[in-house]
Length: 77
Image 1 (cartoon, rainbow, N blue to C red):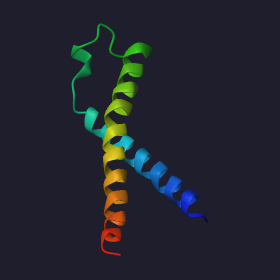
Image 2: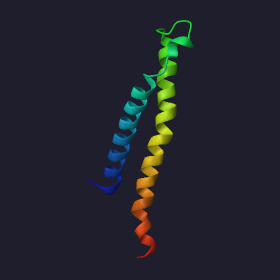
Image 3: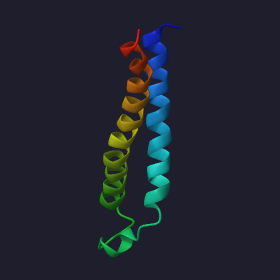
Image 4: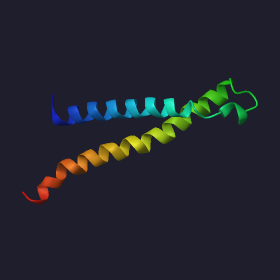
């Protein structure tokens, strides 16, 4: 497997794991107080979009941190 393919696989895995953790964390919020119909399609879509909006920057942070920490030894070499 090439380096690019491995990096893409790791990135995909991290994004999915962080999305699942974000979804789990958002379960603790009482969204039914914000919506007139909390079980409607629009409320669920907003819930998914909110989970994506939170999980993407968090996953990017972890991936960037790992990438930068792996390239840091190149300063001395």
